[in-house]
Image (cartoon, rainbow, N blue to C red; front, top):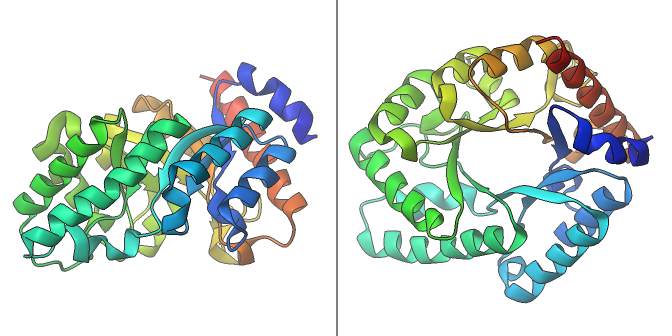
Length: 278
């Protein structure tokens, strides 16, 4: 089924995929191979260790992606939890060292052909003013752009970007440098909803992390909850969104790979129908 899906993928009006993080703790290279063998057409590559950022390892990833025809849409740092410490403290030297370290992600993204690097940013209640936060994001954004990569702020429940109001202020302050990733489960965990967050991100929304939600939990495989993906597709389309819909789950959120792939097929069919109704 997924092999046929891959062949049709170029004809679809929407782009769907699965993040390698959904296979964690399977090693990143092996996760990419699994997606490729299953016929999945695109992925977000989640790095899980420093050695995975070496040119040699990245070239292995690139070779696997090319062999199976998998497009690497975006990359995700394994150091997201350290970003408050690296970039948003009052210690300038660590900021500069952090910027140099993150250049490894930007370089890896460039080599893989990925256009987006995801940032979680400072934790909720961080000490820097919003003005300083935005200035530091802009520095990192400029670093990423030198590699042809866009740095995109994700809404995360434990981080400053958890609130639509913050997202609006960030967008107003940064203009074209503002870019966002919308995570459906994180919106729920923040006490808001995906629709409010999408409206706040507006035409600066570049990427969506997909999960379903319902009585059984807030991070379910698509089709196992009651989130209205067709309706949400129409909402984001009205904002001009043309990016990917990337399933991002934890390994405990689905029983088997077969079920995960069925969820991808369901999501793809749902969004394709919604797109054709526009």
